[in-house]
Image (cartoon, rainbow, N blue to C red; front, side, top):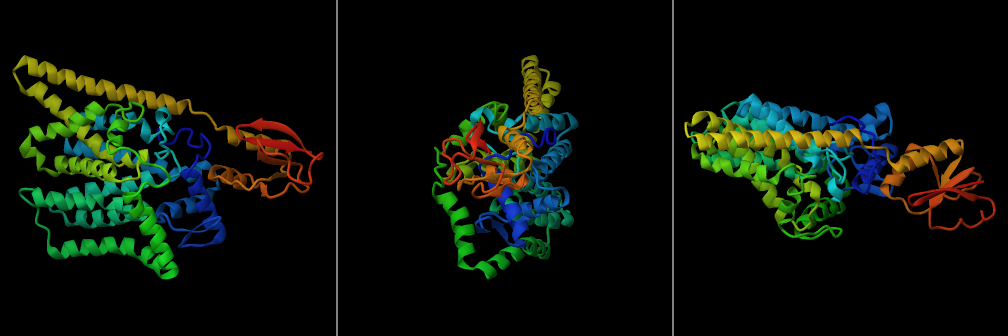
Length: 449
């Protein structure tokens, strides 16, 4: 689910292409610790995911696997952590259901499920899953701190800092949930004030240096683009036309290509309220608070993109595992046969739904094909014996990635055997009668001497 056919399809618009450009441009410009694009400094996102991919590109080359591997590893680790957490909080059967629920959420593994613009997942060149796995690791570490273990507090603080340094302030979620749980938990684990201060300093030691460097080097320009545009405006305004109604994420989760069952997820969020003593336990309260806070936050934001809902899934999976366990307990613990039958049927229905949709997603990944742009460039490169140019000013990120990967020259055809242009364009000035169009695919055309 995480690694098979990881190079399929092509690097996609928009963010995969942008991220591929940032990685290549930063390496070419040697801009470390700052990030760059082919147009100049890049301020929109923190650097940790980009640093990881730059290292992979330097080691194994500039290709889709290098660009997507951090997200794939993070997705794989997240599946293991969700299984381990649910087994610890509930039971091994519940753990299996939680893992299957994750695998059954198509949005975590495929591009544009059911045609919805959702391009960030565990198999894409984006940092979302890397941030989410750091957040979930912090969630588990803070669970140990809730039981009074000091090491969990420091581990959670460091992982929270890494989550923030990967993709921004949503990474603070586990720390916020831990603080809220401490306010409602009874009995409350005793944590010394100096340990809380030490954890805060540990978090700051991870997050602060890069931000301080960027402010010192770029000043107001960095603050305006990184904090005001990429963060504040995203919350208060609609960026790039990505607006929708407040309930759009609830409607999104109803699409079974995105989430296998919004009904099961809703039941998993409601059932804990029927057992008030358990509701204050970290294993129940923390995942529930995480789901509610994320859903409330993204619903109130003006900019709405489908992948903003991704952080919900691991906590939802733990809750779904808990729901399955509750049904098993009710089926085994009552003598009322109607209740017993209903609980047993519910447990079987949950297991059947998540298994069926996990199988669907595995099938979709097995059937994914290579993209047309990649095969077009490979064919052009072979046909033109490497003497190839690209003659157009338009440079979307996915195309720029392929030009870099295949080392295609930018600019007028010159003495090149072939050049690539946009389908609807005429020949560039000065080469009429020299080239003829030999192939058209998608929005691109190949011209040859």
